[in-house]
Length: 590
Ligand code: NDP
Image (cartoon, rainbow, N blue to C red; front, side):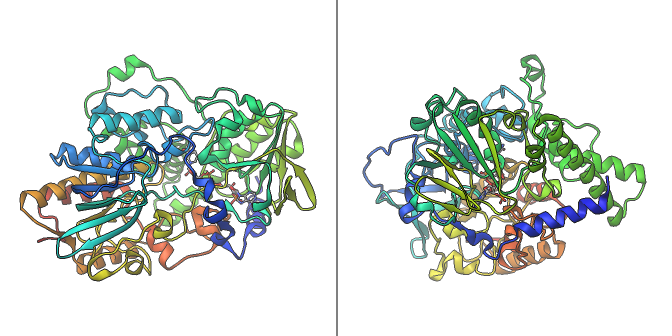
């Protein structure tokens, strides 16, 4: 491997893709594009507006709401209502039902509350329908359906200081009151569309992957053939993690498939396997927590005796560790060198795999990723590359420029026009935009201050959970805490535990309000900033949502993605000690 040549190629490919408009290149699904958000799965059930009092309202019915609801119930807080815009629980797994959808993180650590609910994941990497069913299982197990409201979007969230509760208004005319609220509105839930000239003019059928139209394509989420596409010319824009999973299914069914690629994903080996029920039955109580800590330790550079999960995420970390040990150089420079060497080795393997699988040389060349593996979301698949060996599948590589125009009958790449019956947008979800744009409401705290104003210079919180000026409100996500991206639910289950402990304490001590102090919040953020551990934001990477589309953001954006300086495992240990101490240092109970 000529490393200088590889580096030069990385730079060259990155340069091609840099755009002045960054995140602004995408358009919001509003106005004439609002129909791309319509729920194709569950019809909206009519109901009367709610005007009642609830102890705890959780906004969002994905894993964040489910695990927090579960922990609250376990702590004896029964009056919990989850408000969800989808027609059922599941969050991302409610919306993403595209064929082939599956989770890239091993089910034993990704699916929360397995021991509590008694579920055995069927495979190491479970398909989306099983994860949706598991969400429903958690809902049933903890009686979270009883008080839930679905097909409902929060439009206003306002703190009423006199009454010491939150007022929640929705698009269904509700005006509820809640003593406590939590927001688990997810970092990747709002679909975005590529801002391609003429996108509004396409007269064929089109949809976003997170609202898959099975009425049009035929088939179903379990992978039945998309039989209605047999005589269709289908185009798909985007080749990220979503597209990688659905392309094999489209390729098997579509008359012709045109894959419009701007940047190839890295496709590592999947190697899925069924779960052995005897092995599963032998796992000792407490196993899931042990697996969670083991994975997080290994994936974030720590040492353990055994790799329990053994997957693509821990593989790269293992390689780095083995190199460091072999070199005996534990300095920061030695670690960085080991990281680069391991990455070079991994990416060479990934590019060699393309050559080994894809027959046509030019197609294989175009499918090779030229960037470091963690610059973009790594993908794992055993059928994706092979799809390009079918005669009906055409890789339309745009040399980093993307589709440049859409008209009534199809799309243009350069001057070349591709006629299409159906155009699928695998163009991803908003990440770098403001929280209120993504969640659809702006919480208004004490003295009428909107959260967007409190966070004008970026997220500011204690532990990623509490915001000064917003009493009795909790934020549930990875940010300003562990920031563990490879297994997001681990962040959520820990936050759920923390919130349940705080609410229990507030109820036991008859506190009407709980809020972090400005001082504690300031100290927490300063500590995070001094550590400089932030997700993504590496401007030397090829553009994508991992690095704010290649635009260095050293202000608000980078603050949002700050993580605990000593890493996720240390954060989880810290927060466990904090919530168990009973002192709740940094919070005021009034
Ligand atoms: P991504 O944001 O990863 O991908 C969007 C795609 O659209 C990119 O390939 C992008 O190209 C492309 N694109 C944008 N504009 C244009 C254009 N004008 N012309 C051509 N292509 C264009 O979205 P995904 O939905 O694929 O994935 C989002 C995230 O969801 C993942 O990163 C992952 O975190 C999660 N996910 C997880 C899965 C799992 O666990 N298995 C499965 C699916 C998703 P470019 O790369 O050049 O920007």
